Image (cartoon, rainbow, N blue to C red; front, side):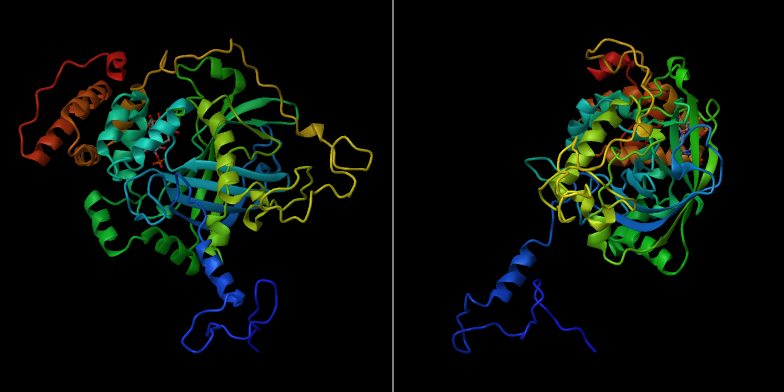
Length: 498
Ligand code: NDP
């Protein structure tokens, strides 16, 4: 038998077709409350979209650990044989909710693992690095990716102006403009935790760690031209691909790897291992296979399970810790805060965000407190310490102290940082075809920007490799039908950054 339609308060609805009116031609009666309820709900069906990573696609799955890294970490989720249910949400960074999927952009690669010790969120990207290393620059960078306040259009001038004045962005810009800038769908790209995190073991020893998720479907990317054609046909190509594959039982998988750095090595590396614009070279810190991640279940309801999903790097579990990475430290605050704004103070009570282990805390009232009270197990235990057997701290979850030395000050994030060497290493990995597409993609992205900004950026390309700058000059000339401009004497990185 068909279910009875009810109001949200559970009463039967006698008529869901005809409004109550005075006479058959109206007007409408205010007492037709269910009409008001329907209209009011409609007005509230959208919540604030994420300021970044608004457009996303997600699915449920499992993380299986096959390797043994128990000497590095006590995290239950990372012990040999552990199988942990999880949620993934992929996204573009800049586009709004209705943006086309196949746009050139970095992809978010956000993972939530429902571990026995609480939720562990790894909120990464499909690239191992990021555009900036100091969080002071993060809101400004995002402004350059979003719409111009006057024209309400995206501004290539703003992007290249910021990038050319921020050479630490070169590494990420080069990856973005390379073939990997437009994966054909979320299953055909790698994921990276990007930041350096830490692992710690029962003996209180800390190791620095990078997380990598290598696609087992193989990398596949669109050229700009192919992406234009796809977008001309559908704006939802990622949703179609991810949902379709899982629906057909073609479950995508990623090989999970870590790189491990002994704690004291961080003082010896030539680069700052906590700098988000740098990788750890594989030759120095080889990737170790630890398991596999598989996505195997589509959400039943996109809004409830993906739009409501709240990922935050602040969610760590015993055995996993943060690192001094300044961008990570800022995101530990700002991601959770975004969810408080977007979903409500108690956003972790929404089913998709709820830990699958017991939860006991003293946070009180506020939006979205759907637990029906605080979670202490005793009505009189609503503060701590108390005499009513309320939950108490567990010292075994205390991570070892961070060995940090130095005075509290503002340190120039450019000092001692080479913004070029790792980009040269990447450029040298590209074959001629990859290089030519990189040049053409940059030339297209630079269309219409002021010449002095383009020249400032070309100084940085020149410092990576003379062939990089020359290639971009030629590609720009081809695009505009001009002769390539004569190369200028490169400014020092400091001049270029000023
Ligand atoms: P390796 O040759 O050992 O590693 C190269 C890495 O580059 C591989 O992981 C490969 O990914 C990745 N790669 C290949 N083509 C591209 C591309 N178009 N865009 C982004 N990544 C790509 O060298 P190193 O470890 O010494 O690193 C050299 C450079 O490679 C770095 O400066 C960095 O730019 C890039 N890289 C390094 C990573 C690292 O963690 N060390 C991770 C990703 C990139 P895959 O295995 O999927 O083919």
